Image 1 (cartoon, one colour):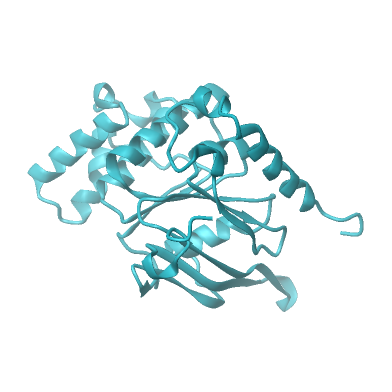
Image 2 (cartoon, helix red, strand yellow):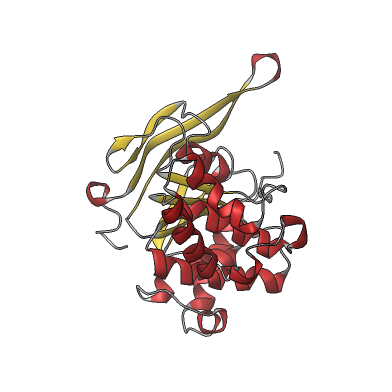
Length: 271
């Protein structure tokens, strides 16, 4: 394990003994996650992975400030997180474009609300539309776009607001296979261009191993960190294409290891 990246002292984002309990019908409480601790280095692409219902999306929502921890604390640049803020941007699985705005208008929207001057808005909008390869579609309406293009709009809109941390909750889960791997490769390009810290939730092992610099593997419900490790087969670098990643000598062993963790977290017969 990379000691520097795992050091909370130099980390961009830190979760310390975080738990979240929900109250359901008849006053019953359910623990979604418990005693979750990990850190994310600046510019790192960190993937939260685990079985369905393990609480990884709950953890992401607490980082975003959309949920409040029941215990523990979350720090960004050493300061506790209290609610939502512009220093964190969120991309969801569902499409979130405004139907009444063009692609350009959608990307510009957050900056306009935040008081960014018109000339700067125009410059940043053009830059991020080019980054997500949508310049030709800047005057199109969301209803005219494919699912992958709508997600590119969401990514551009979020990055245009210059968040310190980009949060992504299964953003490519609804896409077809070809569009999905194209979007994954696009995220590698975006990471290299913007040096943005990314925390992403996925249930897809191949996606986690391709995108992640580090994988945080959650146990079954209630979720806690079962394993926290860099993606070793990459040997400290990011891989630009899926073909190259799948062909690397240690890739198959990395996938086999994650699959064994998944199998170990299957519900018991008495559950």
